[in-house]
Amino acid sequence: MSDSLWMLQRKKEPLLWVVQRGVGPLLATALHAGHAMRSELAELTALDEATRQREEDPYTAFWTQVGDTRIIPLRSRFEVDLNRPRAEAVYRKPENAWSLKLWKQAPSTEMIKRSLEEYDDFYRELRSLLADLQKHSGHFVVFDLHSYNIRRGGPDGPEADPTANPEVNIGTGTMDREYWASLVERFLADLRAYDFLGRHLDVRENVKFSGRQFPTWIHSHFPRSACVLSIEFKKFFMDEWTGKVDRVQLKLILDALRSTVPGLMEELAKR
Image (tube, rainbow, N blue to C red; front, side):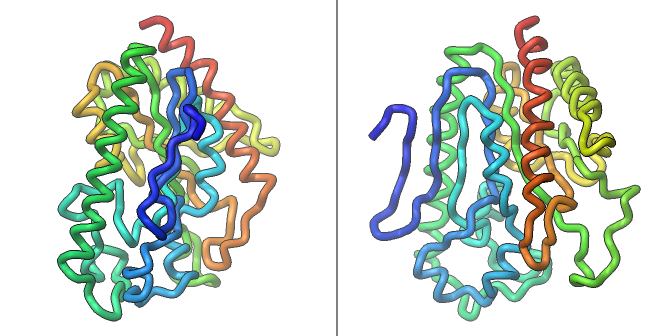
């Protein structure tokens, strides 16, 4: 196996995640891009494929190409959610997951234990990976990439109020904002400046989301080394009910993210 590609696989089950290692100080991940489930859980889920995918973040793994190093989880958040605290990482009740009926039969204690072992494995490997980044780069940036729904009333329902739902929400609520101010503000300015089909994206900070467990964990373990930007794109680039994507906009979002990298590298170099 190549040194640049690391995979973890449980016997006869889908891969947990893929890590592609690079040499620079930018890591990108899409924690909710995965859709696979362990067979024992797939048999118990009450959710159909379309409903499950609607609450996942399809296509976000494509944007991780912006990173020097990439982490791409392949399992569904409905198996284990890597962006929630460990005690909440396995959805047990409807109130844990948008009031959805989750299970035909509740997972056993052993099944939940296996899911939490996956969670622990992920954060163990993450600690090792970030320690290497810290060793080689000193300071580094993490793009925590997500997408979010805007038509919860159904495919023909109204779109969520744009005043409270920016096209791009940048979550910075888990960091020492003052310490990382120059990087955050440069990123916001450069992303807003990108020419997106003749207009500029509506990019705002901590309006819809401020960041959850993944950035919280990284900032608590690497507070003066890691700047995690939790980047949530409203699903304007796709139909969240059918799953159909506008590939032009999907690619332009990647280009917009790439346009911010030189500025971030300049700010990192000043440190």
